[in-house]
Image (tube, rainbow, N blue to C red):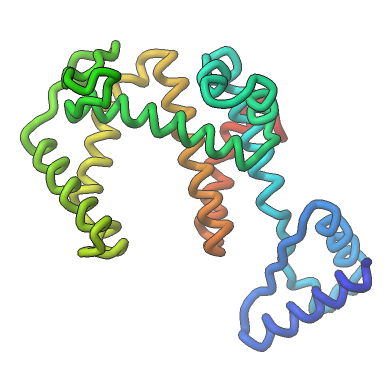
Length: 247
């Protein structure tokens, strides 16, 4: 009902004026279209003209998931997801549908890729079918990626203690977020994976991992109301949309 939409917009504008902030209102696609029509027909000096209308993040999330599926076609991602999900379900996931299932599947693949890279960078053995065999699984790649320094070992050990402290509630999430070891691990991860960008297949999967990271940031921005993170996430999405031919 356009009347309800209009009254909602007026109410939000009054509340925003009371707190001296810019009124921002988010709608799903059909209501977003109607709200835009209302604004177009408002007088130039109307208070509603100061309102910022936003399309609900769910539609952008669907579009970005479809973009990831398009760019990763033929890469083996579909076959990987089919190890967990049914073939028809994976088809929907890669087309941008079944959003919740797609997010779980992509994050599962992303976690597996990170585990393989972390194993090679920091020489951490992955769990194997035979628990008595502690030898790490060999992964093809540049030789220099498999030579961690002593500082890397220290960072991993300290971070392991930090995780145990978090699980035992001896430290808080803020303690974890401000920990310098995590930043050191991140920087070393970025530095040691740079040689992989020289290989086309590895570069494709690194771009995939980056896309999933962007998606996580976008969801965080939507759930926490972080407008700057939202803008940054959308900006990071643009090269992927351009590569897939999406407008």
